[in-house]
Length: 529
Image (cartoon, rainbow, N blue to C red; front, side, top):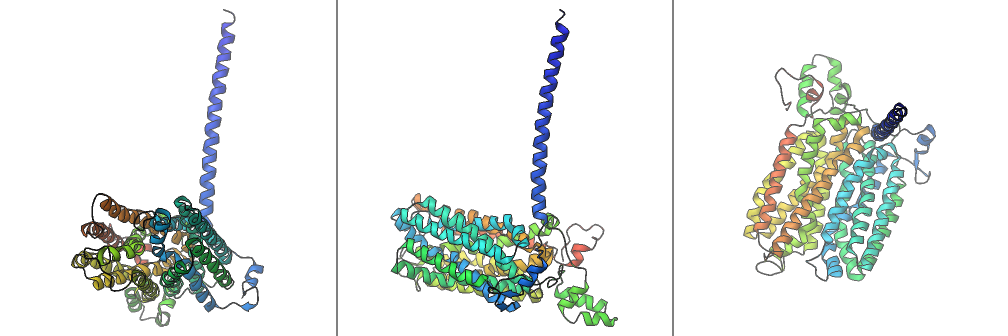
């Protein structure tokens, strides 16, 4: 009995030790979690490139320090770099040859999925590495993107040589898509910062090259396939793109400090007229409203931390609007040759040759894509980003309403005309969105916001592409015919619903500085003008 108090004390000590151990582990876990969250917040909080005085002096010259840097030089360099990256848009030319090589059947296989994976990885790469791209020298981030993109082509060549779909998905889908995401965002960011007064046109010119890649590479890919084998085709494409991009990157440099405004408020044409009338009695205000840029400079600039931008309702409404604007053409881009063949070609109800080859239609589509990126960006500089986005979405709603009628009647040319008009809207969305984000959330948040909004591109490419391809393949597996139109009608309807949703979301984006910064009126719920 004398040992009982001692035993009780030992048990209490053991219990206290166990409790202390559990608390220590919990404290360690909580501390580790707070550290990880802190690191993430810190990473996404530093989105400004801050060069040293020595680096600013070095950036006055480009091309190995031999040429004085001029603001116009970044435009052609950016277009050509984007042109090389735009080769991904001509992937549909590879679908049938790769399926024939790996599955011995041009209509069966998973070559189409590679395109969706690449675009999916592109968006998420831009979102994750956006702050790093924004805070790094554009030549540094561009070089990283170029090297990884080249590695993806080499891995793809190896995958086709050993005939492995899994290695193909990894090589072109993940590796090339990773490099594409970094290179795409960094190039557009570099070009846009040089032209703060015409960001829509500047970004449109840069991404015009991306659309031009589809136009040119649809022919180039077809020629390479005819005169070489598939592994050699990807080796040649990757090597040539590497050399061209390496040369052009030598002309990419950031603008000098102070070149950009801290943030340009969203001022529409109606805002300009109203403000002119309100200040018409002041001579100074009359002079300031001589053009839109002097007016923007006279108003309070929109500048916010990245975290605040990403928590904004406007950002996520714009996210949905952007994703809705691209989903239709994104699906068509990778399936246009098969759609032409099944609805109007050799696999149609009455087998025949289409009026023009599928690869020619793809090339023309690339031309409209390229035109839309420049034209829509330029238009948005004059009538406003929100108004332009609403027009693009309204056009696509109209197109998706008439598309089933066109397919059912077998009107080949009307089908292509509708596709090409939708392609202008698709390209225009990409050309305008960097300027839209820069205007609303500040130039220093552009790369990060652009990278995150490109995840909408990823979601649309993966979910939309797999839904479209999977539904048609399932229809064929269950005895349906490739030319049955009702399966296409089903896909057109869910795309139409998504575009309508995007139109509604865009209506509620507060692009006016009055709605974004001024207090709401009594009883006002949704601020939309």
